[in-house]
Amino acid sequence: MSEYQVSVFTGNVAYANTFNNVYIKLVGKDGESQRTWLTGAGWFLVGLVSTILLAILTELYPLPLFPQDAWFVDKVKVTCPEGKVYTFPMYHWINDGEVYHFREGTVKTSVINGEMQYLAAPLVLLHKTPDDSLKPVAIQVRDQGCQNGIFLPIFSFISIHGEGLGHFTSHLCPISSQGPSPCFPPLYDANLPFTSSYRCGLTRTLFLLFQNTASGGEGMRTILKRSLSTLTYSSLCMPEDITERGVESVPNYYYRDDGLRLWDIIHRFVKGVIHHYYKTDQEVQEDSELQEYIKDIFEHGFLSKTETGIPQSFSTVDEVVKFVTVVIFTSSAQHSAVNTGQLDIGVWMPNFPPSLQLAPPTIKGRANEHTLLQTLPDVNTTVHGIAALWLLSTQSTDFVCILMFQYLYVFCKLTKDFENELKDLDEAIDSRNKNLKLPYTYLEPKSVENSVSL
Image 1 (cartoon, helix red, strand yellow):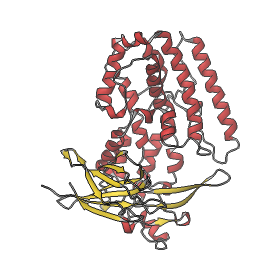
Image 2 (image 1 turned 30 degrees about the vertical axis):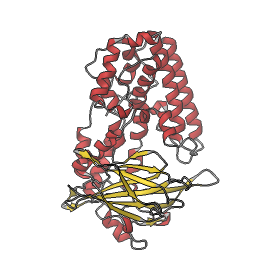
Image 3 (image 1 turned 45 degrees about the vertical axis):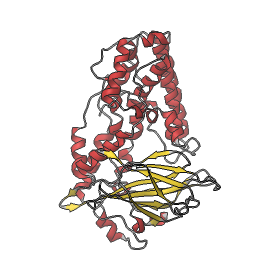
Image 4 (image 1 turned 135 degrees about the vertical axis):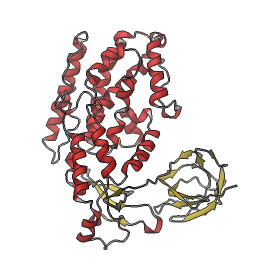
């Protein structure tokens, strides 16, 4: 029988401790451990590291006569019998009686120009000021226990980025919708203006990313695999995603403000088109081609994982409307939001360099101009990183924005109303941006391409 040593790090924040019972379970590809009581009450104090032997699911159960209290855990480290250490970053409040799932969080870094590269694990604490600005209060650049430096903004350190990860995720829906299912009018008419110019042009960009980032090809595949493994239907539905992330009231969040308005406009248009074909829920349920379409996406696009929340079949007209809205929004507006601004930020390489040649600092006051220059990537790595950003962000020569229609002659009124709503939104964003020091333009309808073209 193999023994695994598990170390649990209670967060060093106010009220992070708990007197409740905590249970933990390790889950691997070859099996899982028994649900095990981590330790007795009173052990989970602020900043404390608790260690047990066990072969990660985490549960918190209240003790009788003790008040219910949440527990804030930084991370869990698991040492295998072979000595290999796996880190599970959490930084999460654990509430009574709930089960939480956390994935292992380390990635193998690459070698560039003969030198081992480094990745950071940044965590930023923000404070909302009376004038509704968000100011960084503290910056954590790594997760290695006692080596974990917490820096004030004046000591802020450059951040390393996951170049293009959001870009790759937004290709999933259009690829699934171009599958082998028959092309039937309801989804064809709703999707055609948004997917007709779709083509896959990632080969050059992928090569640049794999060869010139700290994660490299192997690490990038690990990151992408983990990212897609946690993809859920609700995360693709913008209103639900905003609610789940708890950012409804964050001030000056223009991605949310513009995105929700754009979502509503697209949703109304899709609803009009779909309701033209399906008058009742029964018609949806009896459409075998439609049911095969969503079944194919569930099985091959999301590998039949029910935990993603992706529908396996359509039961109502509203379910079809929601799904088509998700596909269109993801391949147009969402793609523009996560993709278009990469060059604007990244062309100044220290904003988020593709790689770090030195590990993030652990002690304040030790970093200076010399160590900063040593940490930044080589010139050739920088050039390739910016080239990748340019490829991802540059507008294609056959760019068609969502304001331009060439196909839907049948739905003249719907199309006209859709165009008018988009123009109104475009004017509203233009008016707001005139008063902004840094305009947010990535969800202006005239800047949003009607499909994924790269």
